[in-house]
Length: 330
Ligand code: PBG
Image 1 (tube, protein in one colour):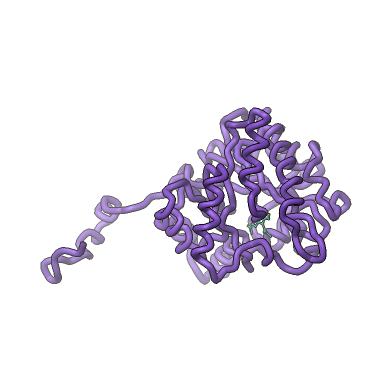
Image 2: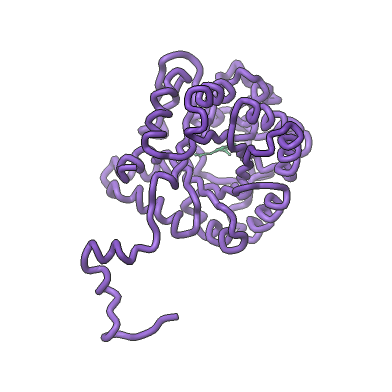
């Protein structure tokens, strides 16, 4: 592979000028690579800050018109919706997930009615924003039940598709849910609705600020290690992805992002399918606070996102999406 040697070969030659660096640049970033997560709250005309995520807000649905217009103007292809469900609507079973007037359903209808297919909508499939115990599925003796949870998740998926969701994104890590979701969507004539499987989701310590944002942090009992992946494992991620592709996943997500670049690359090289990366809340807040405290420069945001492209990601879910798109001049 490597030809030539010093001093006739000097790799610094191509780095001397900006035009030359641009000429040999191997990866680039555009707003088409970004997915913007939006947190929703009930009520009217409110924009609530999230303490643990500086610069990120929770919006009421009537505020979405302006926000989504901006996202479209910045040429970001898709938004990911997350609800901050009021406590009095949570229960042991996550029933609110199946309410056609829950925050996600209302927001999806609103966006689709107003913006048609100008933007993609991605919805999380999991019960954690709706359960009092904060777990992604039904809990029995402190264990999250698999098949019983799937029975609910397929209903949640179908409901989201009926509301106009374009990309169903199961983030619950139950075994076998992709196949069953694909089946119920197809049976109900939603064969064009895509499935983005969070095939590789680690039981991570970087989700803290998100759980704060959706209000599941205080209520979460124990941890999620009996369904999310062990962060010591790598080969297991290939098995997860292989299964989900067989079951009908169109794209797969690796989550969190930065500590798992090796996994992104491995999956891309093995399967050659669209691999998405999620730069999660903890990663966001660390970088954001680093910039705020002048420990690192603003450019570290682009550097972190470019690393996902280098690893082989097709797109990145990031709370920085709007500010990056603005900086890139869309
Ligand atoms: C849960 C879910 C989580 C995130 C997205 N969906 C957290 C969890 O598994 O507890 C985390 C996202 C982030 O930290 O930014 N279904």
